[in-house]
Length: 491
Image 1 (cartoon, helix red, strand yellow):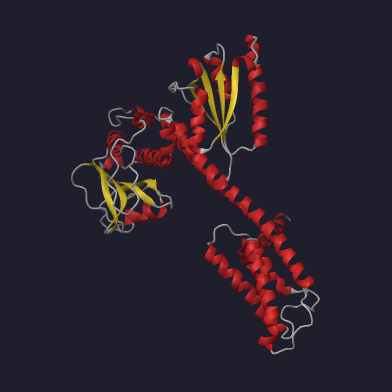
Image 2 (tube, rainbow, N blue to C red):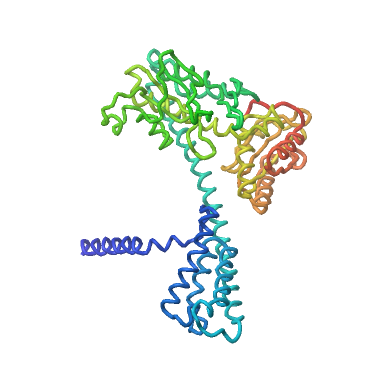
């Protein structure tokens, strides 16, 4: 009996998969947010013409189906309206009206008695309605895609943090002779290097080619290579940056470790794979070891992606000791390269924020720039809450209140007006209703904390909200906090 039930469930699942494959082509006509305008115009012309041709083949005397029980010809403009919007669908309506006008001359028939206004009015109204439904679906699709992208990035950062915790508890970290620097020390040194970088790059920006955009400098590649040599025991390695010159695309050596580095060839197996997958690779992997080729590089990892998600800076390792090809050391190298990649990506859009407030924490500048870009491109609003201390607020109260903030938020403890502590909370992707709920909940929690010292929330803190809107919003945040420099405490 159990085997029979199992067989029935398996058969039902196989039939469901077969049906999905059979009717999967219908998903092509769902609302589209990624096709270009040229493709949309092509489909807006092609589909009504195709439907009209089919109608002529079936009913030569009435291709539009004006006198039929139901005019199937309207499915051409309707499908286009759902897929691309009402504007493209109305093109089909205008095309049908033009065809009705010229059809007597084309088909050699007698001219019609009167223009079928009711027929075309009903088709046009239905096209507008379906176009609005398609627009609403496309907006929800864009919002969903951006939320998934943001959650995926946060998940990747959480996975790397979990690996840091795992290695911190490993007994291999205690072997100081063979492993002079732990992963925790390496990440702290990397963070210290980024913090000391301040508001200017460690190396000057590369010279710009006339007529081409100025390439963005990498954040201190020499210090990063030196850190990798100490932590992961690299011997010869280089950081290469892609540049566009009069001769086309070239890979320039931005920083090097050692003197005998070969020329970077994008067609080489290891380099070609990271340019394709955007993932770190090394020659110990099975799919590379089976090729049997002589690889000039033993490890490679992307260090920055351009606006088209193409690798424009990478690390290529030429020589490292044989004992370094063990799993923990390779994972350590991948985590450090991924951390550098995250920082370099976030640094691409912070120029305006850094010029508005150079003394602000780098992480605050980066997150503000990232959320400002989301708001500018997709109208996804984010807000910043500033809890400014009025009286004597202890560090314990501030730390406890910071720990009660929403999990998706980021917090910084800074110095506000008069040198009093202030808590800055960045609230990503929040609506006005969510902002009101946040204010109500946080005031209630703060009141519970301050009840122990017989204080009221309005006597201990001032609350201000600033919309995350690029450099103007960042200047407003600086004004609310005063001109004091940022405290090193950050969470």
